[in-house]
Image 1: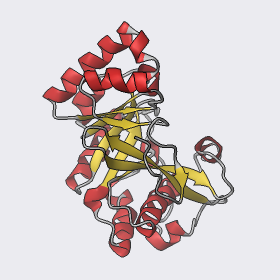
Image 2 (image 1 turned 90 degrees about the horizontal axis):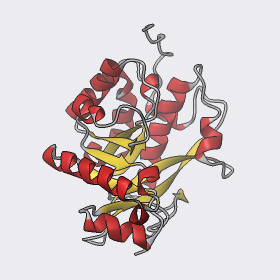
Image 3 (image 1 turned 180 degrees about the vertical axis):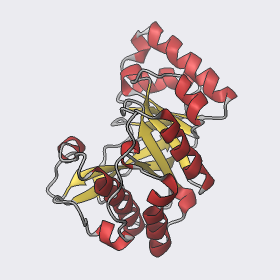
Image 4 (image 1 turned 30 degrees about the vertical axis):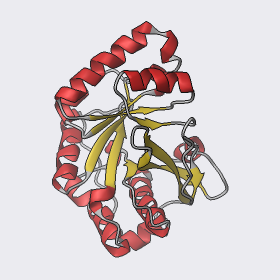
Length: 252
């Protein structure tokens, strides 16, 4: 496996917040993750957006090998900056690009600077990585998770069940949370195979003290089945759509 290229010179958190090194500007939308038993908001996921309403797919299409590091740094700082501006009191889940992280202890510096400067507690930050994200060096990603947890951040695997590694990811990376992929969730009330897969995953996560979130939930039928199975944390249009630079009210 070829080594990662050397990163560009480090920037300050203020430079990242101003978008230095990028030729496009970004902001953040937030979507609630709710606890249906307590009827409270457990966390918000920060989702990248363009300044003119561009969705995440349009923004991510502009990310390449030349600007991946700068984008990853800028996105982290933007998430913390907007969350602080909105005075979010819940944890904020921030997606990161593992292939943009050269040395975890160095790349996290700007995140720590931003949190300190803006008065946003690191205990409220969750870093999540997509299971389908192509990872060439699993040891590298394991090191990232270990360093982030050492710094006090919670870690999560997004879209769990969408990739190829499956349950092996839990053994390798020991995340604090996983988010069940929406492909497993969709119409689960009509699909015993999906119910069986999720039941096994829930049992494994319970044994490992891993919190499970069902994402992409859209209907009351999906919620009812998952609640009966023991899921209490949900994210999806059923409970609230993302709102750009705003805190959306959950729909109970």
